[in-house]
Amino acid sequence: MEFTQAELALIAAAKQKVQMAQRVRVGVIILLILGTLTLLAGFWSHPYAIYIAFALVVFAVALPQFGQGPKYEELLALLQQKAAQPNN
Image 1 (cartoon, rainbow, N blue to C red):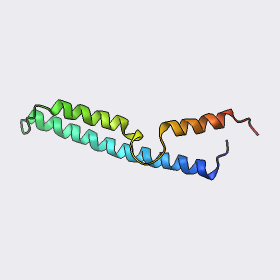
Image 2 (image 1 turned 180 degrees about the horizontal axis):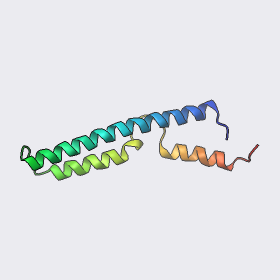
Image 3 (image 1 turned 90 degrees about the vertical axis):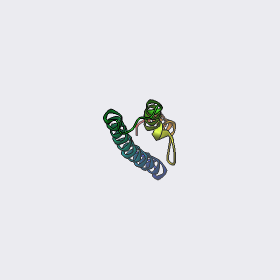
Image 4 (image 1 turned 45 degrees about the vertical axis):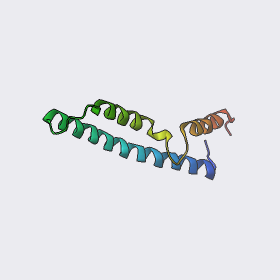
């Protein structure tokens, strides 16, 4: 399967976006662990802590669809187009 330069650029942008999402997810996990530890230790007692934690998880899961770069649907369309082409 051969790709054009535009398709390779799309793939590279998607790869960069996934790497950024992974870094943010690690940060979210660290925040959730620190928040849980501070709640258990009694240093922080916020009545909406569970809602904040849930919002962080939703954000981390949906992160690849936000911001610059190609969306999942664009990459899927590219792969479907390549799969439909007859082999040379």
